[in-house]
Image (cartoon, rainbow, N blue to C red; front, top):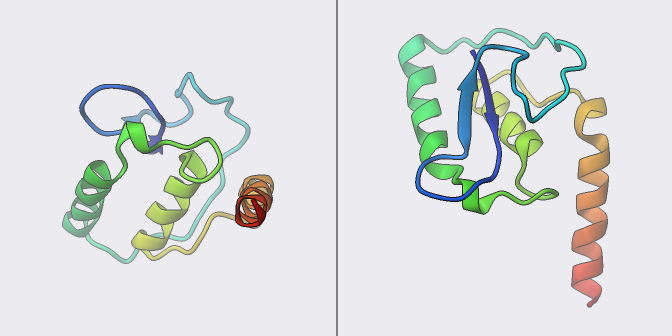
Length: 105
């Protein structure tokens, strides 16, 4: 299964579960192999349930709370670390600049 997060309107979660590489909102580039989690199926299910509640579609922000920040949180909670830096480097850099500019303003 492939889990992702996106915005939207209406009730429910912004978290989506799909067959890997089939999300029509994204252009598939390549598979990135991460370490296997040491968690059991039940523990993973609990984490997914918590994320379903916490990641609401109306909270989506293209820079600060997006599919990449969701993926990093999921990976960290699974105990497999963060996404490789090259995947979200631009978003992290742009987000830092945005927060700096907001702080000055």
